[in-house]
Image (cartoon, rainbow, N blue to C red; front, side, top):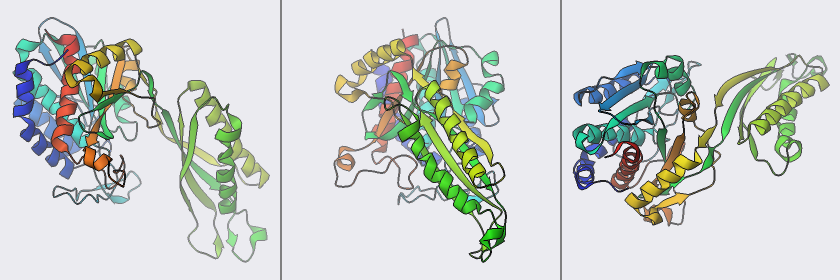
Length: 410
């Protein structure tokens, strides 16, 4: 399908307003599950459209647009920022700060593009409420907190989301990434990896650095654990399967001549298959425990930090989405791509009620940026920001409207 003339004109006429909204959200990011001012701004915008925003999961905001008989569909936009010091040089760069759960104060940036997601979600609401003659049914707008920590979707569901609002027949969502502005990218079937993050506290015995015989060194022990963990992918799973095991932090000790009592590292695991996920987690725990035993050390403490569910695009619903967006954007601008190793919790909304999910990416960079000598910054970089904001937002809004109206459009 392609959007009708009135809706297409509305997108063009309000694009400058969308860019201004994007810049405002970019200036004011908030950390995961702390999106208090962001949620208030979203709720105020929705109320101005005559909608009744509802809070779920603390800082999640939901609005239901009812417009007569017809299907019920849901569209999700995530709202949280990241603990990153922005280095884009933009005149609307973030100077915001926040406090992490451990009490650490940190700069905050929309380094994953959720500012574009909020903007598209709000302008989707504006177009749908202004052009009710073009559709019939119910649209549930989900502004979700805490995507970066996999806490937000879970919190909204545990807060009774689908027991309170209309249950959709499909869930849609999208994410900006370093692709070509004007293009969208979608996978059929498995779309993104599952993710598990663990914190490991290695326990030893403290002693003077000159008397190692009186110590059990948790730094050396942790180093052996980390080295051995690199063999999980190469030696513990089949070459036909995919997994990534990354150790992202390692901390231990306070002084060069003291062997400390403990050391700590964190690791992240990405897998596409539930059985492979179970195998990798089992092997990781076995290696950590065995290395401690080999050193005569106390049993390490392993804590789960985050766990992202599967992100699985229903093949039939995805095929329908591809057909609709090709008609709207042109087939040259719609790309069916393999699954990516990033992770998302959007799938939880669909899995909780057993309905299809369609989740896609839209590009944020101009051809000049993509074809230059240096590749543009990717998500979670201090340099990440779309360099063609109008085209990026317009494409995101056109794709969102096309998906929603393919179900509820007249």
